[in-house]
Each structure stands twice: as C-alpha cells, then as structure tokens.
Length: 84
Image (cartoon, rainbow, N blue to C red; front, side, top):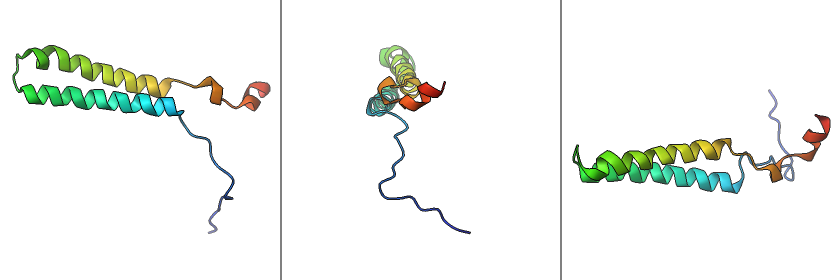
C-alpha cells in the first residue's frame, strides 16, 4: 500500500476564516464563563444562577453556531462561481 505524499508548496485552504475562529473562541468563552458563574454562586434561586448564567450560556451556543454557519464571501473560489 502506497502512501500519497503532498508536495511542500501544495496547501489546502483553511476550512474557516480567522473571524470564524475568533467567534468560536468567544462563544466557548461565554459558555465557560456562564457555567463558572452558575457554579460560583452555588444557590438554586440566586439572581446570577437563575437569570444571568443561562442567558450567557445561550448566547455562547448561538455565537458558536453562527461562527460555524457564517461564510466569508471573500475567500470563496472564483472558479466555482463560473461553472455554476
């Protein structure tokens, strides 16, 4: 079985743009901070545990989903538009 080797100058394009990675990092950070605040207050009926933390966690998940679905039109391959 032969192993295919890539040429050194042949590179694959990035799956996401740098903005997508930054948005994903922000979303993960929001989720972690939301769970941390919920754990630090440690009360069932506390204001932060009941109102602030769930909103932060939800915003984090929405931000990650948006970052995954967002497409950067500047990085699209122009040859794919010509064939369509």
